[in-house]
Image (cartoon, rainbow, N blue to C red; front, side, top):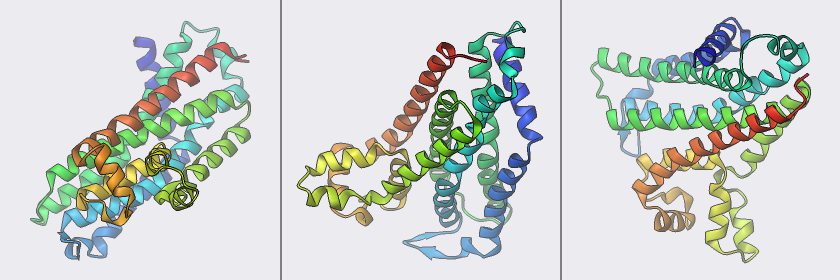
Length: 275
C-alpha cells in the first residue's frame, strides 16, 4: 500500500506540473464562470431555473469534453513511460508492478476528477452566496455521474495504453475509441437497426453498451423522467429498468466497465514485454 500511495503521489505531482492539466482546469473552471456570466441561472427551461439549469448545461458540456481529455492524456501514461525507458529504471527499484500500475490509476483519477468536481462545487458556493436555491439531490447524483464517467474512461485509457507500443499509436487508438462511441451517441443508429427488423430490445441494448449514451440518458432522466426526447426507445428502457433502476445502472455499469478495462490492461501489462 505504501508503494501504491507513493506512486499515486508521484503521478499527481507530475500531472500538476503538466501543461495539459492547466488547460484542463481552465476549461472546466471557465465553463462555470461563463455560465454564471451569461446569466444562465436566471433562465428557465422545461421548468428548471437557477442552479438546476446551470448544472444541466454543465453536465452536458462535461460529457462532450471529459472523455476525450481523459483518453488522450491517460493513454500517454504507460505507452509514454515505455518509450522513455522508465520501465528499465522501474525494475531496478523495490516497487511492484501492481503498485506502480494501480498507483498511476489512483493518482490520475484524483487529478481528473478533482477539477471537474471543484468547478461544480464552486458553482454551488456562488449560488449560496447569491441566495440561489441549491438542488442538493441533483448535485449529489451529478457528482456520482462524473465520478463514474471519470472511472470509465480512465480504465479504457489505461487498457489502450497497455496495448499500444508507442505514444502515437495510443493517441490514435484513443481518438478512434472516442469517435466510435460518438457514432452510437443519441441512438443515431437505432432507427437503422429497427428498420432492419432488429428487435427493439436488442437495438437499445447495443446502444446502452455505449457509456456515453448511458451518461447522456441518465442526465436527461433527471429533468425528463419519461425520456420523451428519446421517442419509442424510452419505453424499452423504462420497462427494463424503471427511472430509479436506470439511474443506478448509469452509475454501476460505467464504473464496472472502467474497472474491468483497467484490470485487463494490468493483466496485459504484466504479461507483456516491459522494455
